[in-house]
Amino acid sequence: MSPLSILLDGLPVPFEDHQTIMDAALAAGIYIPHLCHHPEFEPQGSCKLCTVKANGRYVSACTMPARDGMEVENNSPDLNDKRRTLLQMLFVEGNHFCPSCEQSGNCMLQALAYELEMLSPHFDQFYPNRPLDASHAEVLLDFNRCILCELCVRASRDVDGKSVFALSGRGIGKHLIVNAESGRLADSNFALSDKAAQVCPVGVIIEKRRGFAVPIGERRYDVEPISVQAERLRPRRAGEEC
Amino acid sequence: MDALPGRGKLRIATATLAGCFGCHMSLLDIDERLFELLERVDFDRSPLTDIKRCGPCDIGLIEGGICNAENVHVLREFRRNCKLLIAVGACAVNGGLPAQRNHLDLGLCLQEVYLTAPGVVGGQIPNDPELPLPLDKVHPIHEIVRVDYFIPGCPPSGEALWKFLSDLLDGRTPRLGHPLLHFD
Image (tube, rainbow over all chains, first blue to last red; front, side, top):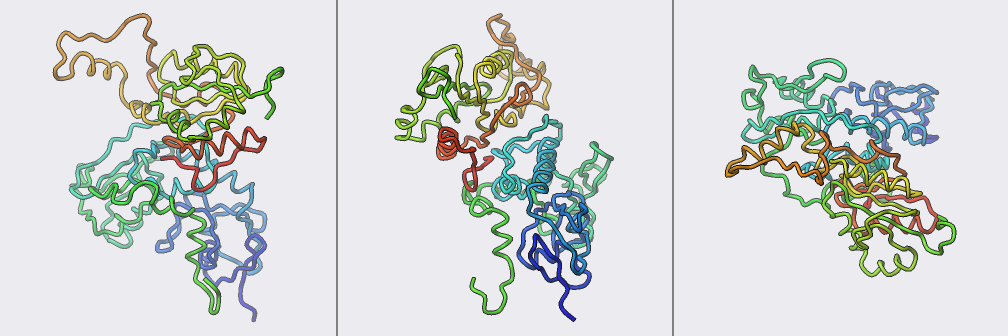
């Protein structure tokens, strides 16, 4: 029997049973933009940045199981326009003031905005009022930048076994909360060594006293665009030149 | 792009609204290419010329967001007169640093700064009629007028400004790729 494969932007990409479109693309080093997906966690398909067209239908690549012969459209002007609009909505919903953010240059939201050439927020800014939580000795929480990806929720629950974080509220009122009676991180059992401290794709969970250890201009996505890094991380086949 | 009828050179106006002049400093960072720019354009209203009113122009560059009534007035004057209006820098694009006051009550801010701050004795909130009234929130310029192009960055580098302007002057669609497109 020939190996299973999907046609991703016309290229045959192999996959194994039970893999999603995203799994197959990541293994092949083909970049599908995403924010809430992380290969170490159960996919949830909430950010919609990874929306692709599979056999003519819009689906989330991170949750859609790959099927043999499935035709998937990924890097097209139509999809990238929609992704850019999603990014613009994320940017205006929070307070994403990059020049003062310690995560600038290491931020996936910003890197995706560069990748998709998002030049303006387009929509009216919400400017929500979201106070910081600086109570913890080692970690600062800046809720202004939260994009509700739930990676910290999943990491704390599934890896750390602590369930320090959760989302509360509905619709535009939805927000990240901390599992402590006071609501303060210092009063939870969160620790800097937790997996949840490592997975924030933006600048919400910030380790204190590390802000400018690497100067602006030399950070991860300053050096190389996010799509180039994804391609570089592709596992090389035997005999292939690096 | 084509110059205004009857003129050989393109005409550019620039202004700083609620900004820090950093983007104008960045424009000066194009260094000796300023000579090339000046061979191709004339400057109308700008902090560089000290001309106070904007006449008909091809390109208007706006640095800074909108924090008071005068900013609104100047921005509308630019929009009326400029064929292309360009938001330059973080403040014009999304409000930037001045917009960090947006979650605070303006009246309480003024009270704290001018009346109740430590060391203030006999203070008063400035009320000279010549002072433009502050807006309750700072806004990016596209929330007030139509904007044709955006150049993000705090500030955009001289290289980014030069790439953008030279694309435009040569008739190409301006485009900032990696690493010129930056939000910080």
